[in-house]
Structures are given as C-alpha cells and as structure tokens.
Amino acid sequence: MANHQQFQSCYQNWMAQQRLDLNELLQALTNFPTHPDYLQLIGKKHINHYEYYLTARAQLAKHDGPSFLAPTWGTTFENSSLWIGGCRPSLIIRLVYVLCGVDIRWFDVYMQKVADEPLALLAYNSRNIGESNQGEVVDKAMDSHASDMYKILVEADKLRLDILKRMIDILTPLQAVEFQVASKKLQLCLHEWSKRRDIQMGILIQIITHLPVTRCEWLRDWSNNLCTRG
Image (tube, rainbow, N blue to C red):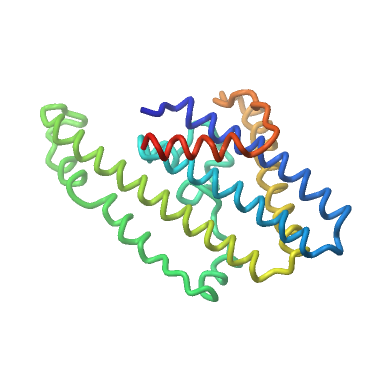
C-alpha cells in the first residue's frame, strides 16, 4: 500500500520536472519562435509530462483520496487555492467549458454524497461525540467516503487535462508555448513564495528536498509500475 511519503515524493518530483520543462519551453521561445512545428512538438511533450503525473497521482490516490484533496505536502497558501486537489478554474476556463461543451454535472452528484447517508445519519444518531460503539460501521462509511473523494479527484484531473488539451489546440504553437511558460511560472513562483510565507508565519512545512530529475522517464515508468501493481 502506498504511504504519505510516496504521495509527497510524487508531488515534489513533479515540481522538479516542471522546472526542467519551464527551462526547455523558455529556450524554445528564445531560439525557435518562428518554428511552429518545433513549438508544437515541445508543447505536446510537456502535456504528456502532465498526463504521466496525473496517471501516477491517480494510482496513489486509490489508497487515500482525501490526502490529495487536502495535501500535507503543500503550503497553506497553495492549499487554500485548490479546487478538488488541483488548480482552481478561472472565469476564462469557465468560458472554455462552455465553448468545448464539457459537462461538469458529475461534480454535484459526488459532492451530494459527502453530506448524505450514512455519515450524516451516523453523526446525528451518536449519543457522544466520536463514540466508537459503531466503529466497524463508521470505518466502512469513511472508507466509502474516501473512495468517493478518489473518484472526484480523478474526474477533476480528467477535466483539467481535457481543458488544457483543448486550449492548446485553440492556440497557435507559439501562443501554446507562451501559455505553458506562464502557467508553470505561476505555479512554481507561488510554491516558493508560499513556502517563504509559511516559514515567516512559523508554520512547519512537510516538504522534502527536491529530488534530482533529468528527464520525465521516472514519471512515466513509475505510473506504468503503479498501473501494473494496481
């Protein structure tokens, strides 16, 4: 069974990979701004990196979905901005939903189950807060809830990836690379700024040292191994 150290390592490796990807994207913009075929190739390459990460994360999330919705390895500022374990869609992205005809009604269906039976009834019928005389029933209900959280995360990641791919298709190769540069810069900068803020606020951050990454093969191989075992 996967543990929280693996969850954290997956995220930290992805952040390290993004730094490498950002450097390559910036070099492409600098050296090949008028080569659309090359820019398109680079853009798709880094979309694949993101897809490998989501595959690896989904396999790990099977073991504990809620951990990915409220990750202990993120900073407080980052976590406050999460939307179902990832980036929060903006108004522009909402417009893309409409233009692409993406249906997000599944989210309402899953979220209704959070406050639905049996957890709500078990809590309401408890005489004492946190009583354990129905421990087996409660554990089963919480396991079911965790499974629902995993399904929400996977569906949200599919939605994020689908929207990203559709947006890349709409943009020119140059615009697509510029978009990816801006996106990665935003996430990486917020991550570093948020770490500094948490340190200033005296908040203990559960973040491990960045692992050395030279290419994205580790992520693809890891996701394949997890899929084989899962």
